[in-house]
Length: 417
Image (cartoon, rainbow, N blue to C red; front, side, top):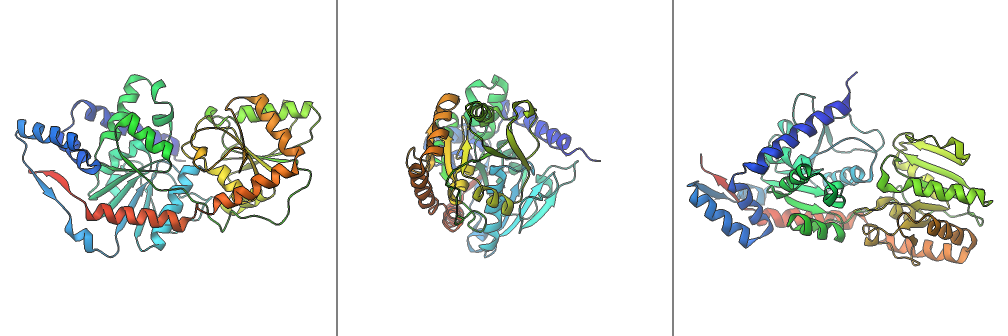
């Protein structure tokens, strides 16, 4: 049986090696085009001078055919098929571009995900080939992770994007080893237009990589995430979403808080939604935990609706989708006060917040919600109101406008052979 994790790792490492070469030996035409994409006059001027000194000949191409083409072809390059908020957003976005008149293909080395409905074409690329080798006659390519910018650059698509949703390349940048940090930096300097999901991401991309980005807001699928008519007067159903082996998710803090509440006499039922079983054995804590592995989106919506309190413990997030999904389902939210969730979450308005890692403060917030129906009702009502602006109709309208604007202004410098 094929080990897809090994295939994924092989191509990831291969892309890193290519980035290492580009770090030391990158043609100025790359940086000129990055300057053109970002409208960075200084970068444009410097690299025009470099090209002149090195005696490189180049021409400008505006790809006029694309301005009048009715059905534009889009290829998304996917990093994996795992149940994550980031991949869910990419797939939902692709589905809706398809409904909006685009011809959309998803490409990945891993099998088609079974936890989400994919309406567009899905190509599982054979292990020996790069994703780029399966992109043909495409107008727009969108890299779903920073290392995949390497593959995007190899395609013939005139319009290239990187959809940045935040990971260690953003939130742990200063702690990365110098080589890996340089690889991340090199990838972000390549001539792709950067799209992202929040103000904190826009700021981080500018501060860390000196790149401009455009915000395409996240959204909620109202078909799956909606309010039910009834919640328990005595809340006892707690919901956690995410992997335990991702330390920044703060699930250890949540479990510790729930254990201490148990010792304090609170009888709580815990549902834990996760792509795989936790790596750690929590049975010795004798908590009432039900693990739910890789639910479908329909099942996930039902899980939210049947929960009284949703807790998110993330130390950092680019946006944080699960708390917004919980709000859409009428579930009271407690969240760590990371910068990403503040894109929509307001303490004591649509959620209760605690300082990331502060277990004692989290315990107090849980007790507060359990004891006060008034507070629960207030944050639920305001949460439902908050969700109204995070629609796919709005998100795709913004993305479609961005694509058409970029096509209208498209100009790239191409080396003459």
